[in-house]
Amino acid sequence: MPAPSPGAKAPTFRLTGLDGTHYVLTDTLRAQPAVVLAFFKVSCPVCQFTFPYLERLHRSYPNLPIWGISQDDADATEGFCRMFGVTFPTLLDQGFELSIANDLTNVPSIFLVGRDLVIDRTIVGFDKEELEGLNRDLSELSGVPEKVLFSEADEVPALKPG
View (tube, rainbow, N blue to C red):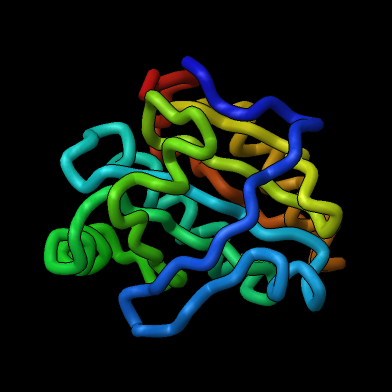
């Protein structure tokens, strides 16, 4: 499952969001200590399972950006966001240029990118332990006490490959 490993440099990019805003990774990292990039495809069942938990992270640490990066068109992506309650910015990877630049072969692929453009965490598929680690990272970076990401009622498996 190729994807950039922690310690690799993230490609810089400028993508348009569903809201029409242009998102530039380097510009955002001038003001933020990190950005979470979550690549997905609307038809991917593991993405559908994972994104509500990313939304929990977004609501728990709203001062740190989480960006969904869709490999689908705007209409399909808007439907996905409505269906799975995604409120964080969602960008469109038209032509898969950014996905290709990151050597992605699986979704979801999630990266925590630090201010220096170095990837601090890589998660491919659904990995409960890695998402709990991302939760701790976001808590530390934001200075907000760590929130509960998974409850017992969620009955979350340890892994779901992407």
